[in-house]
Length: 162
Image 1 (cartoon, rainbow, N blue to C red):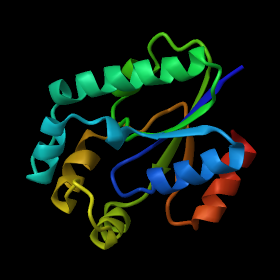
Image 2 (tube, one colour; image 1 turned 135 degrees about the horizontal axis):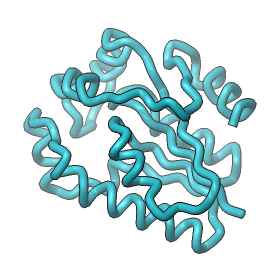
Image 3 (cartoon, rainbow, N blue to C red; image 1 turned 90 degrees about the vertical axis):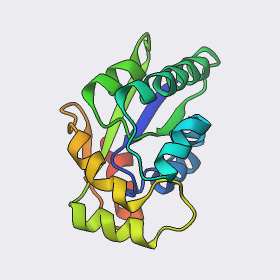
Image 4 (spheres, helix red, strand yellow; image 1 turned 180 degrees about the horizontal axis):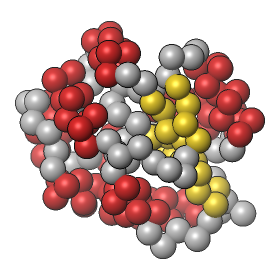
């Protein structure tokens, strides 16, 4: 049976780095939701314009189809995706009949802002972080992991508790 683990949180929380390490450790496939954004969405974020729900709907639909494709092929998957709102998480998990686990990477605005300021070459601008925190609806059915820990510590928590 295939399994999906979604590593979620605001931009700069470490979703991609941690997700890649998890997938490698588990021997699963890895996907970064950022790779599925339309050029129009990337252009908006590059210009410091926050995405609206209407911008995210086709992106979330595409991610859901990709996840279902992995399951149909019996391939377990780690997906790094912001999934900021409950409605986004519902859209992502629509018609998924496999085990799906959410891992919520959380930290203070200041912690995440520092991390974003160190990151180079990403289309998500630091100025958009406030809008992500405003949109964030922390999940109730997720493993919550504090980003103040090392990647290795977070990895061990997730492997132990998922």
